[in-house]
Image 1 (tube, rainbow, N blue to C red):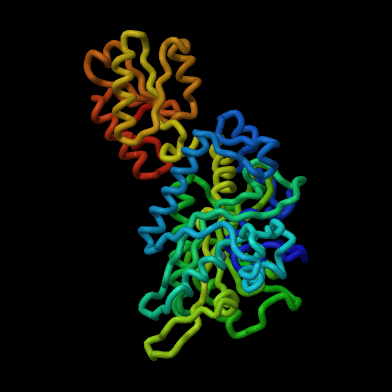
Image 2: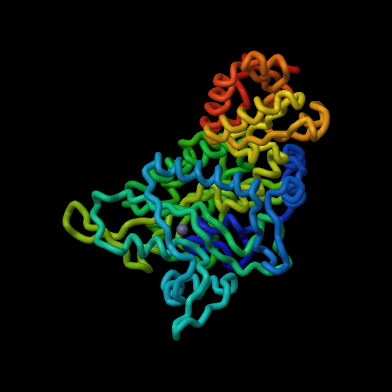
Length: 449
Ligand SMILES: [Zn+2]
């Protein structure tokens, strides 16, 4: 994002949309970085695992999600919405279209129209596919008078936006024309910015822990030389100081990089590296003074006067497309149990145990677990265990287990759990999935097979 083309430097295009930008070219990272990054390409794994696909008749950069990919995406979206609700966010929905005039006000039209789809004429008006969610959220904020008692007002949406990427750069889920963004805007006073940014960074840290991913680095993106930045040295100094204070207090190492700020404010970028060693931004926290002015946003303060709020743009996982692409590559398709398309593989040893397997499968479905049965007609038990190697929990039901009302559990990593009563096995797996942790089982309870 250091190139002169101002991609990703608009309200929303950066905090809310930079997740669709490739940033640095390969070769910038140390060999150690690359060794730690699995070389799984999410495009080939996505095809092999039946997660998503494309069709020339739908078009380049417009992937569809197959049932297994959709299951991963739903789990991810549920996690995000749940985390946001717990953190005091309120969710909204807004349309993926807006009048051209809206983007003229936001500044996207003058700075960003190269990356936008051309306008459509409808009944004498021009409407465009939105390049970010921020302008809609600013209008929702402005839809009625706001009091200081409502601040910080945290507005979240997992919504669609569009980017007219050139077909040459499109690939898999990383570079797409239809983007679903985990987006939020916090309207607050300047004094509240630090706490809000700190809380957002904390949400990012917890999400990465649950997802089993880690940042390649944190970047404090600052303005560089040149006149492309909104002029107000005092506000720049104050917001930069706030983000520095938040980063310093986080205990996480970061690097300040000049010339990477949005034109209206500094931001924290959480960078990840893909299987080919390319770095991109997954998560952002950004302080914006520009959009509230463009949309003349106000709140009534304790003094009865009207004041201008600050907008904090933040995204925990960026776009679901890029997040899932990254998860596929990091885990090689062996997702944490709570994200796995299939969480439980039910493997009856012989025909005689089929009724027990069917009953177990129904019990899994009743508890909301994603389970599939792989019967003896599909080959030897060993072959079926191998076929289910990406499934976190493999439930084996032989004659002894069936007679005792128990099941044997085998974990994806090869560990085995002593046969458990059916209810206990179900309850344990359900609790582990609900906890949204990366660990498959409590260590002391399982032994290597
Ligand atoms: Zn935004």
